[in-house]
Image (cartoon, rainbow, N blue to C red; front, side):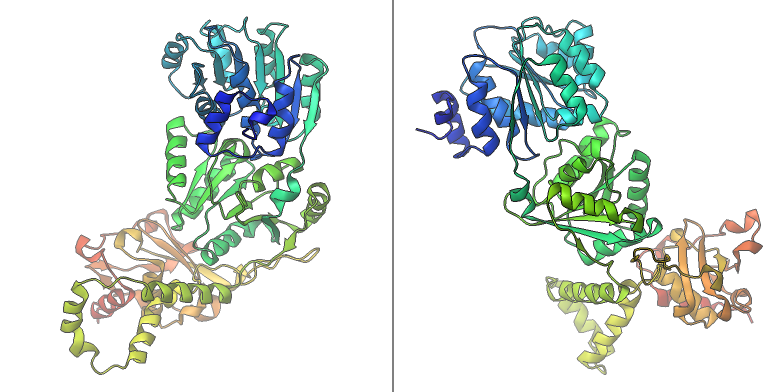
Length: 565
């Protein structure tokens, strides 16, 4: 006899589970299924962490209890998000493939007319988000007077998302004889209020799987000031180019801003929050699931219901207000026996919250440091070297090498490698004015760069000219005869750029660019605080043919060759 059949499930269900490869029930399934299949229907509360099989715990008995001969709505399953509703409905449909039970899913952001049309078919189970279910009730597209089973899935999250009034209204449309099954990861006071108001002496089952799930997750924290969280995140992204994770932020605005900033810097990231349209959400999730990005930046609410395998990292840009939510977040990595990292960015005042988490979820946090520039330089060099070593040689390379043989003939292998490394130094080293040390200590003063030692300058060259920061740095250094190490932050806009230069080395800097032309355009460099509104606009841009593949050397040569005497 199948292990699931021993719990009281029908042979039909057991056969389906065999075909799906399910062999052994999880702890929550072992405890919940026999109780939910009881001949005396009873209200039920199941407490278990995310990813422990709660959907099957209520879905399997629900399929067995539904009468397929009755063509009325017999059960409603409420979930907090569209994604979770879809996943739940998909699983229920899979469980019922040997049964004539019909399952329909409805949620906001989709065409309500199409959903109303689908509900006109005999439907025994409706899976819904609370808001859309209210809309359908008002339009009389869903009738709940025959509902025998109400399932509140992820009940704590529905309350966190502000669905209490919707849940109250929906339950008011259901008959008194119904039974209510409530599944949740936590048991906050609001859940107890719902239990007291709408449930009759519910049986409560709690399954503690935290020790097992946490064993595969390494919990870490970094202490850094708030202003350094973004640069710190960049360093971890650079150190782990194979990272695939989710970064959780507190607000929608913060989520979008961080995604925009990282995206503008060339990182594979995208935002997921409540202000996105459903089409935008679907597009983001499609790219994330197909591994087209390194990091998803999300709010807790927007990320609810996301089911993505093989996440290496969960990053907490800000710790959640409710410590229970930390478990939800971190539980998205370290699944199916694979290892994962949960990394929190905190400031010195939040050290006590790490202590609270250690006590509450019974794990030990490891304090780590933000990677230093030297560590990143070493990592980048090795990654770059491995990329060269593992690059598949193009067939045309032999012909090109033959043409260039005379050019390189006088250089040894070591000489060529040194020159190749030199061309990559700007990529391998930081040139964006970040602090050397982004770490923070308890009670210590923030480590910050003395911005007072720099002067800010304007130059009428920008991204439209086909230049990278490295190209611009080479150009500025070569024309001014100021060593690159004395330049600080460089900000490139479309038509112009701004850069910092150490006050001790910028005397007469603007004069050194007088008479310099690039593509018949006079280059203008002056102190940013000396600019007028019109000085920020660039003049004529480079010709298209010079934008592609431009290098720092070519810009320097052009600059020198066109100096007016």
